[in-house]
Image (cartoon, rainbow, N blue to C red; front, side):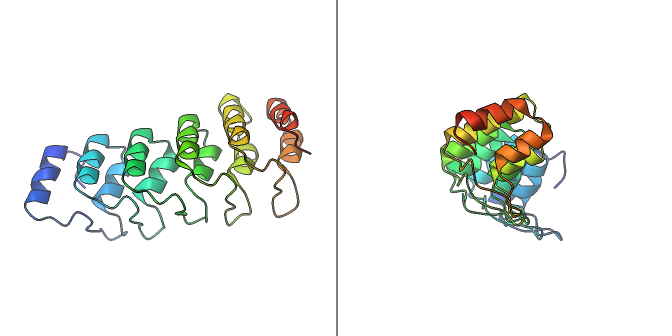
Length: 189
């Protein structure tokens, strides 16, 4: 998609019969390309015209999954309002909640939890959103907030990784005292 194109031009192309879910050589739709660039205006025009928010490219990204993983909250909310598949998974077998948690997108995590994404979904690495928010983070404020949100949402605080290591053990081994305190207060062992 031309980065100079605007929403009006998109609407014109669609009214002239352009295929809204046409794909490029990588299997990306115009909506996914707009999502990659966080082009809210174009994404809105496409979604309102009926673009598929769940259409996956060759690496299993969809507009919904990509917006969630990258913290593109406005586009994410639009996809959720237009039937995003909350059980959809990326190439790592994770829901949108898992990379959002790992990358520290607090508002995105909150939005996905409120939408009903499974907080205990396990990806191909054997990790949940809670585990990724600890294992792949710096333990800072954003990840502390995310751990708190996941705990409050009912995440299984004792669900171990494939090696049997629980979230509390990961937090302690990394010296993440604030995260450790959140988990202990919630009854983690």
